[in-house]
Length: 170
Image (cartoon, rainbow, N blue to C red; front, side, top):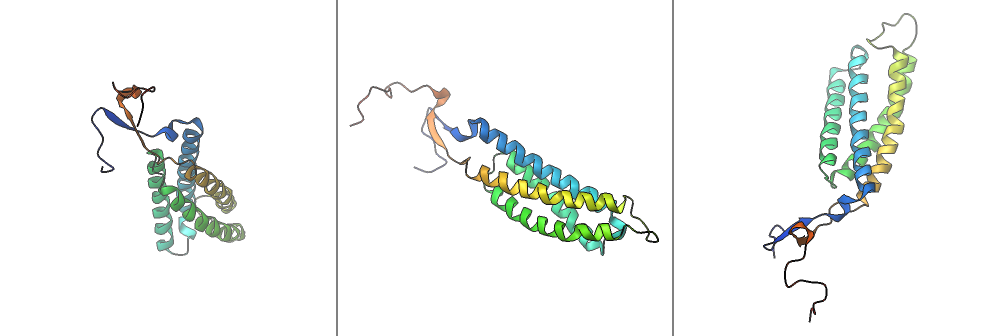
């Protein structure tokens, strides 16, 4: 029988999505993805005049948009995006860890300041690192919760006539 074909009177049920820990994990992962996208947007727009090239700023904004897409997919129970989000978080944590000291180094008299203070941009960039580490951890917990498991059950969860518990299956 095809995977997408259900027997008449049956519905597809995903039991692991009903668990409280799976719902909480999904919410935390989506929240962390949206928070990261917000941080990237604020850092990029707030420091736009000091970014080395406009291409870097555009790539960062695209990365933020990608995280918003990931957040939407996670909120729709897409388990497959979790390892992709974790891999992206590793790369972003490395970039943020390298970029943060540069913002603090620019906080000197005589240098023209960006729209947001350099120290604030450095702090926000440093904040990206622990958010990414938390995202990696929670996303991998979510990946192990098996959101993809599907079972076929009678519509409404009630056994159909002739399929009771006491029946012989042989």
